[in-house]
Image 1: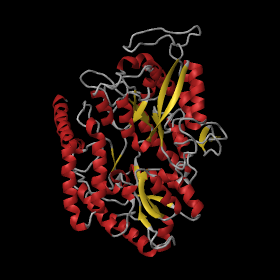
Image 2: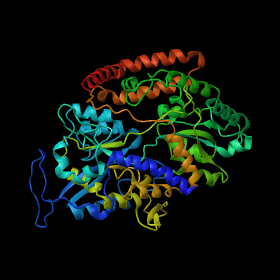
Image 3: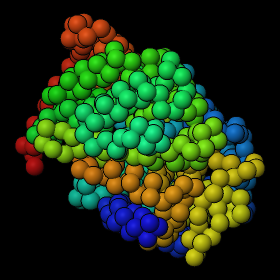
Image 4: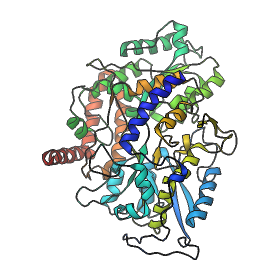
Length: 553
């Protein structure tokens, strides 16, 4: 099974590597840029160095996500890895670093407050391109384009050319197509697998049921979980399916199966608003199916109160949950340790991936990630733009991001045939996010030097049977729909990001929990309010921009 996993992951990793560029192969392959080759805020040379040839001492602040999970055993702003970063950056760049925590689950609201107050960190990050567009249009972001060749050479090499948009020598998603200004830079995603559906196989086995391969079989399994309590947790305690108030994500594979499979990329792109697909043909029927499940007691009746994963995770770990939908490898990650902690409570428990939601074309379609992941930016009122960019470039160097991803041998990894195998730390070196994702902001996914080693390392980085990882990866990639990339400059969504996110969550929660006879009126009224709250303006802009792009190409 290890060999099969390696071969499967190798194909995926090599594809992403080709799309994203080659990157550095070993620590010695990346050399420091000329330390005197600095630029001022307008991109011109300054050459301000001290007697050691280093830049004069300065300080920056850097955003770090606070995920608030059980797996986070240390303060994300003050721990072994932040101390390591601070020491190394001070030694090598003469730069003082202070980390500022922002809730991963409330990032939009908290970033908005920080930006409005002029107190945002010098290096900020977000997964919302629309949020960045809003800050850009308000004049709140530094144009990074003058610095890419001078201060970010290692980042540019690592990101590599963007084959999704031929002609660009670096992966960028927030370039102004008219001015060429670049207002944020992306993490390079090493693995585009996105989401899978998971189920308690031990419960199925006790009921004599196979792994579901259709939506009806899945529904029947949840009904059996509720009625027969195979886990012996008590009839009133069984939670056949759990999710959070972010329904569009935590039920994504099911909802996607109801969308018209013949929908064009153009229509999908235009009508997808801040990653919400509410308006796509068929999506409403997917929500109606969730409404049916909820009213039959198959969905956690407290889901609408869950603003993050904490409560849902705790239910899974306690052993009362039968199924859930999440990141393709979520239950097998050391953080938040869903399967690991579940097995402490229920030693014979099994969580496996399934792919049952077949659409009208007979396929289990689902989205894949873009090769560009998280975005990071420098606010316009930063007092130290150069320092912020030097720090980002420092993170891009192979030896730095490599250490942060794998840590120390014996504590966070062991070497097997020359490849690091990640293990959970039992001391202060615990990583609050897998592979220190929240510190290595320039990369999503493990990179140990070359595609084959990456695949070997990834295949060995889970503390569960490799066949579980194989199946989850295959299920996530099967009939995967690549992200639609349209290189146009959008502005309309930015001011509405938070309100549409909140209203969208309210819409979905309200529609799922409505009585069946009220579902249509609740959904239709909610969609009308959502459109009136800015979504229609966003759709109109996207339609116009797509038409311009199509005409020019």
